Length: 320
Ligand code: NAD
Image 1 (cartoon, rainbow, N blue to C red):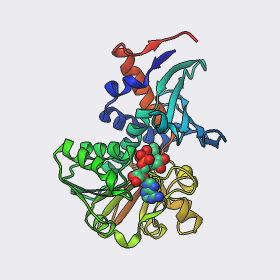
Image 2 (image 1 turned 90 degrees about the vertical axis):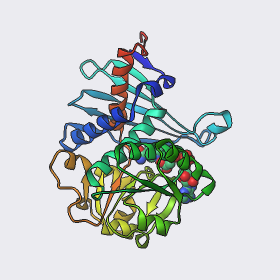
Image 3 (image 1 turned 90 degrees about the horizontal axis):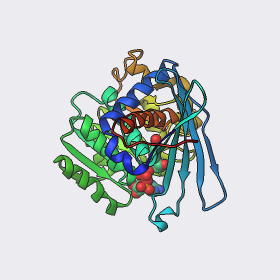
């Protein structure tokens, strides 16, 4: 089997490669060629950790495997990041393990790619202002990906903890784009595309905040109970997601669904637009992409990185 260490990922994987891998796998999911296995997520009763597995099989690219890992809230005390994960790939012809790949940076890249893919297909025409809600570890990746693939001329941002917003200002400076800190009402009024990526358990962006044609990529809610959007905003928007069942169970749309403001049929897999099987935005004023994060995204980027690592002599071969 091949091992690709976490320290090699930054030198191998690009935003472009992540974008292509995620766009392809969303298409394969929507056409029924790829499916995700049920997610396992357990509070293990040790170190307050949440541990679990996200896996799947893509019969188009022949990616089979899982990402194992989770959230260790006290890791930063040892100088480690709190989210830790590893992707394991298997040969679908024999069941033999084929690769183990560091999954921490890959998770950020595949999550940032998902929102950028949603923006490619759903942003209002001529979108120029990007609004960021959240300024944590993932937010910088989200913003970089949005600026790399969009035509944004300005970024505005809000965060519950304003002292963290300098992270967004730094990314804006990398791209030579102006950055301004704003209130949520200004953010909802001015932004054409909004990315929310927080660990909030209460709605942040309210229905009344959002005016005019807007696309929202809601990326922070990946667990039961987390929430970033007002269910009334969700109820009036055209709704898209990576995987419908996951979105209603652990994604942003869980709340509007629980309040019976939306039905399963209202939520469209983004891959259907990619496959030309759904018109996308149409005449909707607000679109929302609920990015819940699926195992197949992890397998797609891990498979791409193994290929690159082998080509560049950075994969280590071990006997198992
Ligand atoms: P982080 O801890 O680095 O940052 C957390 C962010 O949330 C900060 O901006 C913080 O100010 C904000 N925040 C914290 N508590 C809040 C509250 N009560 N109300 C409003 N804002 C609050 O975390 P991160 O690594 O950037 O991850 C952010 C979120 O994204 C997490 O919920 C994580 O689980 C989720 N995530 C989702 C995916 C996916 O595929 N959808 C992938 C990775 C991470």
